[in-house]
Amino acid sequence: MRFEKSKKQFARASQFIPGGVNSPVRAFRSVGGTPVFIAKGTGSKIFDIDGNEYIDYVCSWGALILGHSHPSVVRAVNAAAHRGTSFGAPTVAETALAEIICDAFDSIEKLRLVSSGTEAVMTAIRLARAFTGRDYILKMSGCYHGHSDSMLVCAGSGSAQFSEPLSPGVPKSLASLTIVVDYNDIDSAAKVFKKYRKKFAACIIEPVAANMGVVLPGPNYLKTLRKLCSDNKSLLIFDEVITGFRLCFGGAQKLFKVSPDLTCLGKIIGGGLPCAAVGGRAEIMDLLSPGGAVYQAGTLSGNPIAAAAAIAALKLLKNKNFYGRLEEKSKMLHTGLLDAAKKASVPLTINRAGSLLSCFFTEKPVKNFADVKSADTKLFRAFFAQMLKNGIYLAPSPFEAMFISAAHSKKDIEKTIKAAQNSLKAIKA
Image (tube, rainbow, N blue to C red; front, side):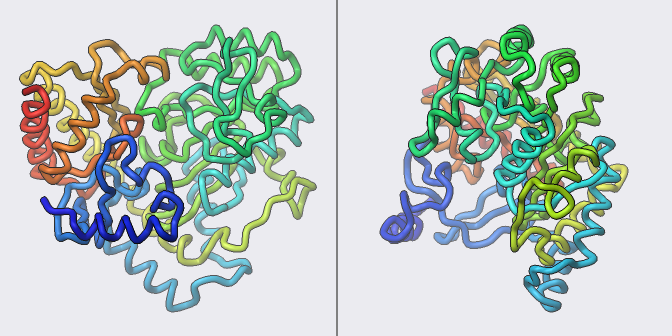
């Protein structure tokens, strides 16, 4: 494959855009080389500006569960655009979308549409603090909840004792209000709840972690966390920006039978356009302005084009066979990748939740962020490069997920497994 045009465009972009990209992981820093500039996408495929074709397992970081340029979504977008691209005023489509989401999630009685997952989380945190009158937030190491100041923290020495800013520009005083413990470690969570008794406004968690790679919750972990929050009169916030509508029509909370107080949604609900939401119990949501005193606003919230795309996408996901077919393809890929690694004698652990999947180059189970970081990132880097040469586009980071869409065919999966076989043999040699 040739990448001359992408290299030229990256050099040009770097003159005007910090790092040459508008979101850091796109820069390929974790995998080396030059980022691929995409020209178009259709179904399960994307095509770069050099004319190379790839089977896409990024799918706009999970947003495109239907695949690229789905005809129903495109028709809805075109029709909405002809009616007007933005009004900054209420539309019927906003209510229709809100109704679909509320019907899908038992825990959501009311919701507020926003434009990004970061905005949804930021609003949820503000609501939790206002509702409880408390300041502290508990989060889990390795779970990413967007780039707002309260969430850009990492565990300090002693982990559960204090937190440190993950980025310059985040005040230490604010970071100190977010306590970090290990994902899947319920004992650590219980200890900090006891230490900070009546101080936690909320605990926020990805019910299935997907931003350190896919890490599933252990048995009863989420249910016990729910009880800890209830016992301490703290809110439980599920960040389902990735898992919402990805695992089933109703999110991870439906699968694990755990009801959060607030839920953050994004990715899929936009049908490929910028759209997100925060929702939950009416008594909490009614604190939002203008009905309540908690301020939140956004000119493009509930944008008519995004709402139209969202409605079109979510209607298709309600098909009773949709997630079953997706599971079959995901299981096929999972089994094929493990078999390819075994034949190549390459250590590989795969974590999968439905159509979310991550490959960790390690022999041991991966249950938390420490396990994730212990996997061989050099092997992943080599694997990524080989797969790209074989026409398979993976997330350019060892700490992300693969996303299978409805557009991926059996032939796509077979080709991916064959590419993995060749790639693993090459990096083993």
